[in-house]
Length: 109
Image (cartoon, rainbow, N blue to C red; front, top):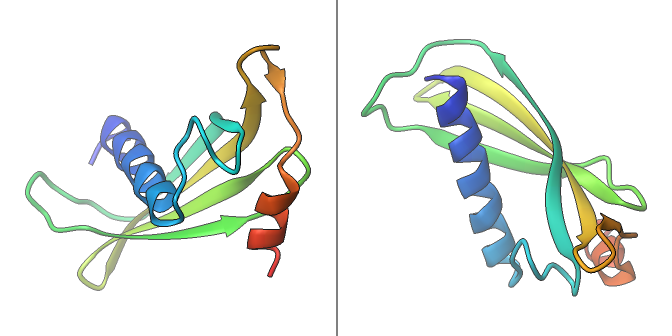
């Protein structure tokens, strides 16, 4: 499983996660989201056609965004870990935006 596959699966996971809470990348509690950084750590191999399980966690919530952590597994074997730094962004001003209070309240429960 190459870097491109991990990046694609992270993005798909992020879209599905946002949809599950009723939001999108362009409207998450009234603000847009962008990916600020990404990191990948490989722990095993996976191949085309393998059935993967992806676990996701929201961590390090701060005034501008949060980290999404991913664990990729194939059966009982851990394949990779990933982290995406996600920040709120205002496309009109082209600047970072503070996290909406509703978002902070939702995830700091």
